[in-house]
Amino acid sequence: MTKIKLPAVHPGEILREEYLKPLKLSPLKLARMLGVPRTRIERVATEKTSITPDTALRLAKVFNTTPRFWLNMQASYDLATTETDVSGIEAMA
Image 1 (cartoon, rainbow, N blue to C red):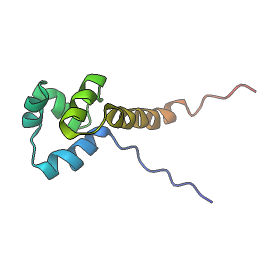
Image 2: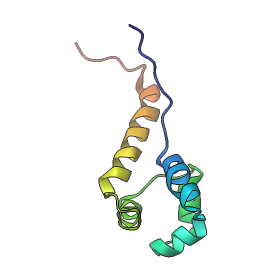
Image 3: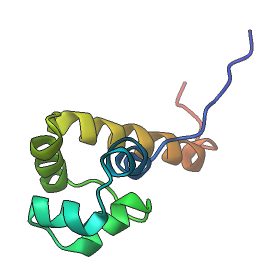
Image 4: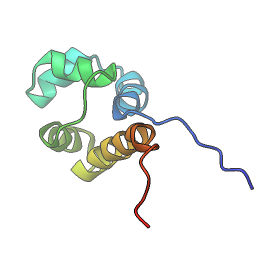
């Protein structure tokens, strides 16, 4: 059986496609709701920066999720994108 490896999904894509677009929220409006700079949300939504614990706590409160939801997505993305960087390392016998 062949494993199909799906591309890593950045939490910013989830934020943008599952929250901002359906709710017709701009990054500016969400940033105001969260009490953070507009650029923080813009950078996450455009997949240029990671979800921090502080951002995860704020997103969880506004969207009625959990901080772990956001941080687990970030950790999964980070692991998936880092796997290729360490693929050449040999395990000790």
